[in-house]
Image 1 (cartoon, rainbow, N blue to C red):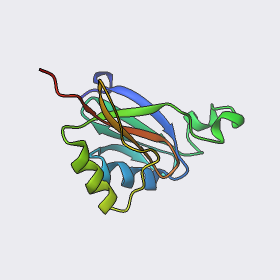
Image 2: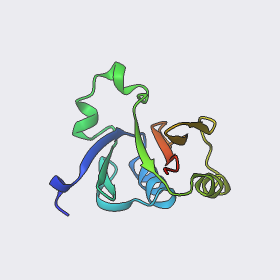
Image 3: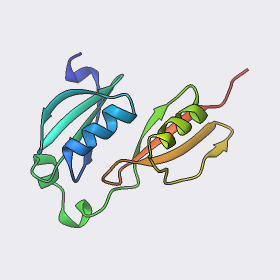
Length: 128
């Protein structure tokens, strides 16, 4: 796919290699390009996630007071079997940063990458 076919999100990370390992090993992303330690991009479906280290232009353009901690925004990954995914990731030693929350739209839980950026794992509610 051409990069114009993706929705792209940039996460500032402490360690590009650790971020690539996390997203590819645990969340089904594949490496599209790596210029570690500055930058890599990983893809899953139509999501292109740019993981940017401190030497990347994206990180250098971020004001220091905003770069000091991860934001409250998050990427949203829709799953068919959230409970199985929670079990699989728990067995891999990953720690969730929220409890499982369910509502009329579905169920979700938050996971953090090695730099503290949030990933929402979501399973929509069954529809009649």
